[in-house]
Length: 287
Length: 264
Image (cartoon, rainbow over all chains, first blue to last red; front, side, top):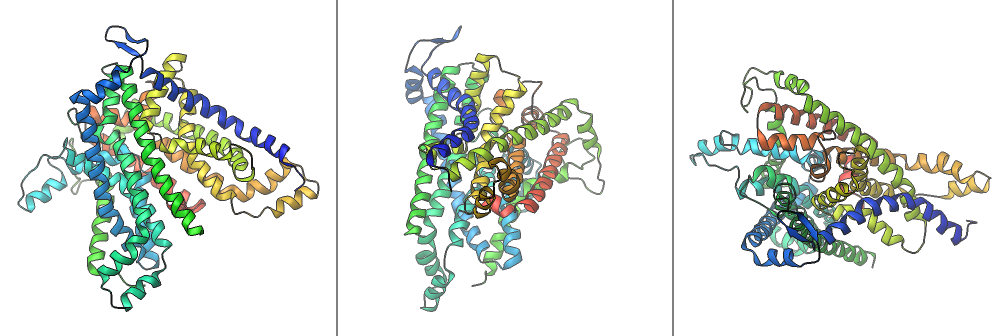
């Protein structure tokens, strides 16, 4: 092409300037303001009063109330991730071995709920798990008896697994697509059992997919808001619902900001680790 | 290719039931004639759908959401097309940093963005403004458009563009007559994906909508925390229907598998 690098760089500026402007005003500025707010002093009568203090962060680390919420969020996030691995990995493997029309049909059935509003799916679970709901009818038929499931960790985890499962299936499915099925065949024809072939041949190759899926699921589950908000009730607070309460009920914005900043940093660490995993896998494949 | 055993088929059936159960029950309960959340037996009724359309709050919030999703998806695509062009074609310093910035909303919890914008809007007096709400949505959905567009623009043959340029076409003509038609599936697919994501967004919007700009998911969230009746199921069934229609359209235009699974 005739153009040199200078006009090209200039046109790049013009092409990206509107987005850059918007992202500076509506993303970077408010996040910086929140970071600053989290160091503001707070007075119950007057709200955020300016000044500089680490007291909100200190309170989060020392106050049992906040520690419990962070630990619960961590626990729920880990259990959700574990269940998503347990269900999502075999499901992706089974899907990848299906014959032509069924494979894409079932893949779409598993993934398309991703497009439906989280509020709708959570509401669906609150009906399924209700005291008169179908799950309880099934329990009674099985002789287990009625169980109160709403507003328990179990309900929150069930809905989280439902919402996060596609994020687990997608990277594992992608990793499986790149496998050479003949390698598994070779293992089988050399006398390896089905299980050995899966554990020793398939699993190591899709490990990066499992790892990145697990990190995405953990990050999204630990920062989820609508699901614990609707299925956890007042008592079962997670980090995100606590931030909501600090901002809109307690009106202690600096404290809410400090929790939000911790959530953001933790999330960025998890997601960037995931990015690393994918990048490394990508580079290795290129040689 | 080894076939799946019967255990594998059972496992798949259970997973599929698990994934569909909440959507199916929402759509069934929406047709109940009763006053409580119950499955319709032999009598199916549309009374709760009628209730929804008579409920001014739901109607207003639905219209708000449609407008918001249309406006913000259009702005997002309008910004993402030139930005993706620059990112895929230019080789300027800071290119990767820019790409990282534009994709970053994917890894920032919407809750954090919500409280950050709440604070900023309160400070500049933008609370309840439809324009600022749209801009916030644009930031959140732009990465979806950008991913599709970057995919559409990499690995595409530019020799036609070069030919047109050397035959004297202006850059604008080349873009309008050659580049745009070639990336059109990415543009329209990106628009639809942005539309869906804006229409569904609840966590950030809860913090930055006012009663006059309240969106449907926020209204539904608020409603569900206070009372639960079959009207909520009817609204949900309508949302499921609308999402399914959009997903079908998206499948026709761009391919749902390519949107959802990606093509790295």
